[in-house]
Every structure is written in structure tokens, then in C-alpha cells.
Image (tube, rainbow, N blue to C red; front, side, top):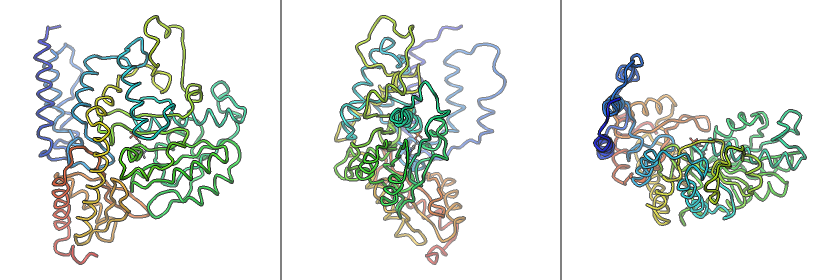
Length: 471
Ligand SMILES: *Cc1c(COP(=O)(O)O)cnc(C)c1O
């Protein structure tokens, strides 16, 4: 192996990251290269001989950059995607350089303690009870899975069944009550857990996508045996919130567990202007959220919380003689609260994001994103042919162009070709919509103005002056 000049290599790598991020606000959002072009740049047979590290990094950067999507830039509005804050991004670079295994405190007291602190801070911000346990996961999917593992443990234990030793065969059936517009990761978690999606009693939703409270209460009252209620804080299409206070109360009167999926919506608790949306959040039994969405931490980063420590630990902790190595045993053991054993130290980046923003900065990020979403809705609803479908209660906007689904889809394709901004599509309440999510710290009012103008330009390109007769 050739020796590398490590300092030069790291400086060159940092220069590449810097150059990319500095041009982000002017970069076309869509990728330039096709998958075939990327395959020819990065592919070929696995080389027989080693390659010096600096050449490898050069080849990767040159080959991959044309295929990057500027999701971390200010005009990416697809899915629900944040852009990494500088302190969080650099913390992740440190985490990679330090290469810590965050599973056990004996492997990294620093990673364990940073997670302890960041977990407490997030609970405080999101109005989750101070004595709740938490785990740092890969994201909302993993957090929903862990939350439902804890739920499964508790509702079956209450029915006299030990799922950890007995498994699910022969267990009392579990009923899962969830809104018709729950996130697909709830269904996938139930598949992983052996509960199965047929256990779901889907409760109809209202005009903005929140669960219908009267029908939820009826479903809870009618449920027999072990019952889990999944509530949603932030509908992925509309941003709508289920009524957490009333939902938790009805569920608890019936002895059911409440899991809240708040991948991005739980962050509404951080701002006085949106706090009312999550009223009663503290009453739930488990909570799932993302840090890589609205907190603007690099991928992959989520958190799961559980109100009852013994339930969380019974469901996910594990022990083995070799794990009890001598060394630090004073810090919390991160391993016990998630599904992974060895894993990267993702808590450093969460710590750094919270430290960079402070309480005021998180509130400001939430408020600004919501204000920019309203700016989008206002700008587009004033343009001919556009309709806003949802009540913009948070950071999500659903837009329709003209009357037929095909036109809205063609408009999205045209916007993506133009590259000024990026928006994804969705089918909601029977129609196709363009879905706009504002979740990035670096998006400014000017970015929204430019994006609205690009959308209108794309619409005119599609239908010409006919746009004004579309409504
Ligand atoms: C994004 C999202 C998820 C899934 O989160 P990942 O981080 O993509 O795993 C779950 N629920 C809701 C409401 C979401 O918006």
C-alpha cells in the first residue's frame, strides 16, 4: 500500500464538500447524469490492484457528483427532506473520523454521553416526559418499529403472554387502530413484527387528513383484547395532526397503548406558534421522530421514545457475557433501546444541531418553514389554474394544476426538467397533487418566489395562455 499524505487528503476532501455546498443555492436541483452514465463512471470490474486513497476519493467525487440531487439545498421541496446544518454536518465528519461504535459506553463513553444529553434535550423540546427512555435510530421507519416492539410487549404482557419467549404463535390477537392516512412505515413495522397488516382497523380521516375523532373513539370502544392505537402528528401529505389529547385519553380509558408517529410533526412542539397542534403529546406511550427531516441533521438519524423504561427495556434490551467488558459502565447503554448492536455515533450530529440552533433556533426553523409554506400556497393560489388542496397548518402544501391528474403529473415533470426547484407528487383523496414540503434551514423567501415563478413558467410552457381558463 502506498502511503498517503493524510492531511492533504482530508483537506482535499473538505475542499470538495465546501465547493459543493457553496454552489448549492445556485445548482440545478435535479441530477445531471443518468444511471447509465453513473454506472460507466463508477463501474467496471472490481480492480485487482489497490488504488491510493486520494485517487479513490477523486474518482468517487468526479464520478458521483453529476448524479447528486441537491436535496440539501434551499429549493428542494420533495418528500420531507431537511438540509444538514453546518455544525451537524461537521459533527458527522468528526464521527466518521473518530469511527466510534456507539452501541456500548465501554466502546465510546463520548458517544454514549453525547446521546444521553441530546436525547434529554430532544425530550425537553418535544414535550415528551422527562423520564421517558429513548433510542437513536436510523429514522422514522426504525423508530416506528421500535415503538411498536415496545407496544407489542406491553399489550401482550397485560394479556398474560410473554412475546419475547413465546413468540406470536398462539398469542392473543392484537388489534391496531390507526388512521386511514397513517404512514406506510407503520404497516411495514407491523409486517416486521409478525402482527401483520390485517390487524389494522383503519379509521377514516377528515377533510385535511386527520383521523376522525368520533370514529376513532368508536373503534377503540369496540376493540377487544390487546390493542395498540397509532396516532399521527403530521400527515405526510397535508401536515394534519390527529387529536393527540383526546386520542390518548380514549385509548387509555380502554387500556390500549398509544404510539405517536411524528417523524416531522412532533417538532411543532418546539414553537409557540404551532405547539397547540401537539397538545396532549405527553400523554402517549411511545413516540417516533426523525432528526434528519426537520432538525436538519445528516442522514441517517431518528429517535424513538418510550414512557415506561421497563417496557422499552423488556422489548429491546439484550445481554451477553462478552458485552460486560470492564470499563465504563456509568453511562447509559445505547444498545438496549434500538434494534442495532454495533452502529455509528449518530448522536454527535444531533447534539451539534441542537447546540447550533438552541431552543430559539429550533423554534425559528419551524416557524420560518411554516411561513414559507404559506407563502407558497399564497403565491400559487393566485396564479391561473392552480388550486391548493389542503389547509396549510404546518409545512406541507398540496397543489393541483388544472382539472385532470395527468396535467399535474406533466407539470411536475416539467418543473424537474427546469431544475430551479424540485417537488414530488402524491395521490390524495382520489386525485394527483404536487406535494411541497418546506423543511430546510437554508430556504429563504426569495427561494420560494423563484420556485413559484418556475412553477408558473412550467405551467405556461405546458398549456400556454390557456392556463387562465383552467379554473
Ligand atoms: C418520513 C416519515 C416516516 C419515515 O421516516 P424515515 O426517516 O424515512 O424512515 C414515518 N412517518 C412519517 C409521518 C414520515 O413523514
